[in-house]
Length: 357
Image (tube, rainbow, N blue to C red):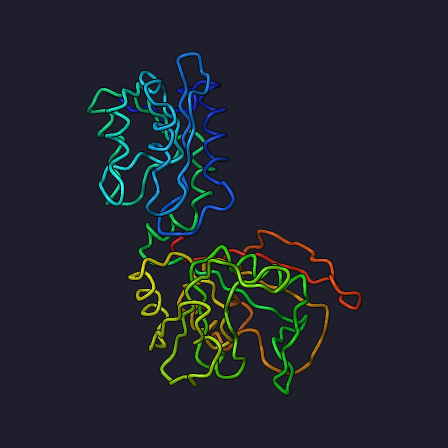
């Protein structure tokens, strides 16, 4: 059976169902983990919703299995609208492609092909069983929903978000080393929001020695969240065992290397997909020059220091023609929370890569 990918191959009901499936996949509260976010909606011949489901984290039923369980015998003859190609392998749960066939689903429409070589192939399994299959509906929306997961699977390394706070003249600390607080309360709260979207916090040994960060994710009241990212400390020097990053508030791993490629490979081997880089200027420069920064988030405070620690160390640039020019994708003004605080500006940027990624 020929697979159809043209937008004209889809019905209005399937389009509505895919938008709903994307919304289900994005359900707030689903814990981060190694699996993508997936939603599924089952439609009858009239385009009415029979059942819907979504994945709730590693070890839980996949979206298709969740929807099929809710539909029961009514799943037979339905169209399954899914944000990701149904999986074709047995892991903690069985193959979704086989489950759809066994349930008697007549047609499957999925948005994004599965980039995982272990799991992909569900579309072929479905077609071989006589199921009508089409894909490509809202593919960009589905891919954006799982942007980090897709990137990590395709690149075989974690996605790296580099975050830093800076003054208007590019300083992250004053000449005497003081840096609390370059960023505002609102910016620090926003940082914790972004930290919660990652599975790994990465700093260098110098940051641990000088700043003694705890590297936990906290709410607006300063209380730690129940789920904490892995804390990773990169560098060869030994750490003072009294440093807060070594406490029991979250797991910590030592990466005894100065090579960003080696560090990311070690984290990838642990199943990590999204690294939040919060180290100092030297570590940042190492990742930037290695081409291993995938998103930049900069909090700019309305102040000048004139001297002090630069936001990033030497990048080997000697002329303006060599300047790195990331693309600005978002500019947001974060209003001051305290009475004496000025607004900060959050810049989100996408680096340019020679490979176009």
